[in-house]
Image (cartoon, rainbow, N blue to C red; front, side, top):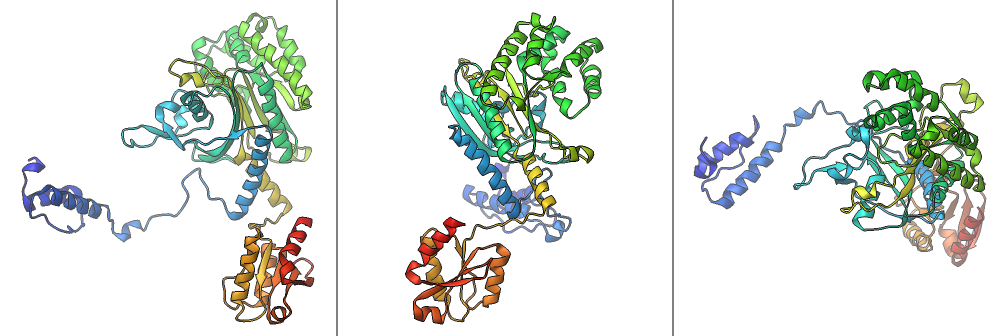
Length: 512
């Protein structure tokens, strides 16, 4: 094939047309000179033509959201924002600063941080010489931020979307694109004080959301690693076996054991020894019991973890939440970056729910300590100890939505406080002047975008939208220098002097 630079005029154009033009496309123009500028213009035109497809080719196009994503209706947004407001206000109450990071990171920032879950990371096409991936969580970007900016201490919260290539079959509250609410404490502090505060925050949020009774399972990765060691798990299999143990909430012990033995090559007797431990759960008395365990008490790592858990139980007792905490040896949290205490909150079924099909949403909050993650990004490997938690907004949202459907609660989709109406024609200008006064006073107000709407139409709109107050201006009111103020619920009307209207509305709104 001849080089393009050696072709002239129409021959060059014809060749490019064949290369760039799909069947049926029409050439917009021809090149009569082989100057660089004209060639560039023709290439641009040819590419444009190649991208145009006949309309009939779109006949099979289905309008839908991508798998694992969804639109949120105005009603759903109201519920979601209430949940987020409660969560963020709790984070702020505990002294956290807000932070945001890009939706995508350099691929190498995210790789080798999530263990077996790394296959769920969304990779993007090469953009300007950078290999990028959508963020999988908010923790790794936070660690990258700390290392990049040499921050040694920080208490931060972050609310943002993350992406995971989960199975297309979306179970309740689990999506490929979802929102996370994270709270983290970075810095070198005395043991277990920040960890205990994280557990306190989880209790405050879950109690505030009124989701029902809940339990926070607690364990320590050092206890898990010590358990694996004394049970005979080869060190090279620690992470992969930990990932299997993490599935115990979703799978039976029999299935988890089968995965460890048949798929991951663990000796059956080793799996059985692990089984003796992972079925244990309790309070601080179980911590004391494990101190006396003939095998576990011989492992230095396990003893360190048990010592910290004992201290943690002291602090959560002082915080008044000890009854919500359970030491659970089956809790693993499969992510590779955890180094110490790990925890996970689950909702407990009520007696009525126990008889019905349970709402399977998994954990509603989780977190743990990750002291080595920041050091992975520091050229000199300097570590910044960190501990944090993440609130499962989507799962909580699913529960709240279901409760609202059960009780038939009606949701207001706007916060409008006052509606400006008129019973007569040709009063648009007065309505506009009046609503401007309300807006300027910080009052949430609306009117219908019609010159001459019927009064009944306007009042029906207020009732349908749940707007509490209506101000009515007409000929009589204009003459007397007053405005009628109507309560939508009681339908009572009073005449208010125009100059006193804003103050009267603000008084009524403050009392409601």
